[in-house]
Length: 224
Ligand SMILES: [Zn+2]
Image 1 (cartoon, helix red, strand yellow):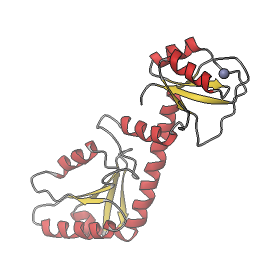
Image 2 (tube, helix red, strand yellow; image 1 turned 90 degrees about the vertical axis):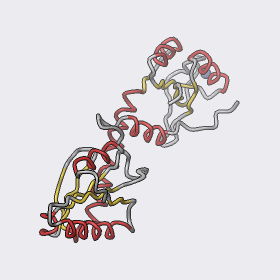
Image 3 (cartoon, protein in one colour; image 1 turned 45 degrees about the horizontal axis):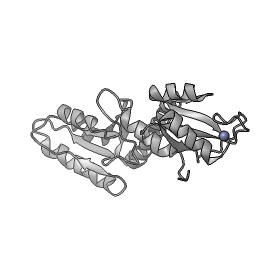
Image 4 (tube, helix red, strand yellow; image 1 turned 60 degrees about the horizontal axis):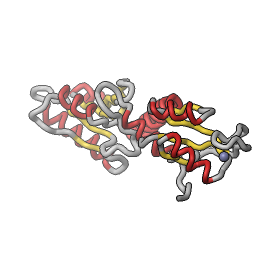
């Protein structure tokens, strides 16, 4: 048995983002979203061809740079499509209606905040890039907050066992000896997830198991 894996911080973050969407469902971070941008035409009577033609132009503009879907289904209203794609976690929606055709613009709607704004078509690509980046950043910040709420520092094995029972992730000071890691696993009844590899964490506290000088922190949790 060897402690050869890291904490998987970014993997855990991604899992948390997927778990903690909102009431509508998940919100995919743009970099993992199967569809990053969905285009929903809003055809008014008598102006369908105009709107669909414009929506296709928007699609062509974005197609090379993003995973984009043009939703041309005719048996659904635009409102039903909004709901459909929101529930599937698509991070960004582009709405295209007759007024947008006239203004040579589109409306962007963020899945994470619901924020809506009009963007001129000549700035479409850079605005989509900017908004997707912003969504990525704000989802990561939210997930980091959630993750740190789940991590508790424990000073004894009893305290650790209780926290594991509550579904927390325990951060424990560790001397670096494998037998202490093994003993942690056995007495907490959970897996040792390793240490963070995105930052170096030096421990100045005694090892939670044997009491000798701690070297780093281990993370212990049940399956994520
Ligand atoms: Zn130890």
